[in-house]
Image (cartoon, rainbow, N blue to C red; front, top):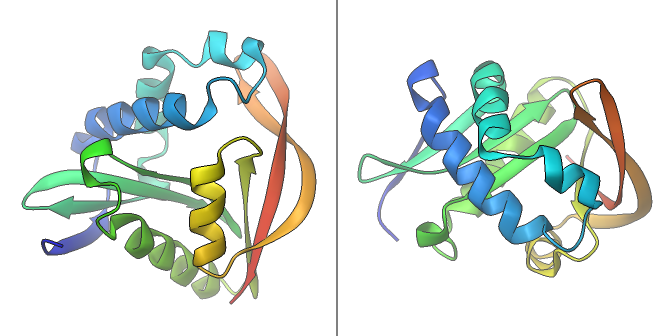
Length: 159
């Protein structure tokens, strides 16, 4: 694996974060989430969301290229995405470890995240990293004008 550096995101990263997020979200979620959510999760929606979440985002760079990111809010690891070209390289493991560090640093003794049931690749990854399936959860995905309930599995890890 090439050297990976982690840093806080800046507004200049938002466009690339949005692209990685949209591509990865579609790869892991299409066919596994309600169609109403798919309809509103457009490329533009990811650009808006990424720009609004810069303060909560840590990015991973490999050879000066943004390879992935993680977003943490309180004790929740909200997003972990790695570009297709960097999957399997260890970037996701480093990002998840950083998310765990951030959650622990906030004083929480346990972190959680949500993953759609059908995203078996992600579920296997989290389990390999010591996360435990804590059961089903209806996750309230925020959309313009409200939320859409998304059936997921809640994963937890004691820090």
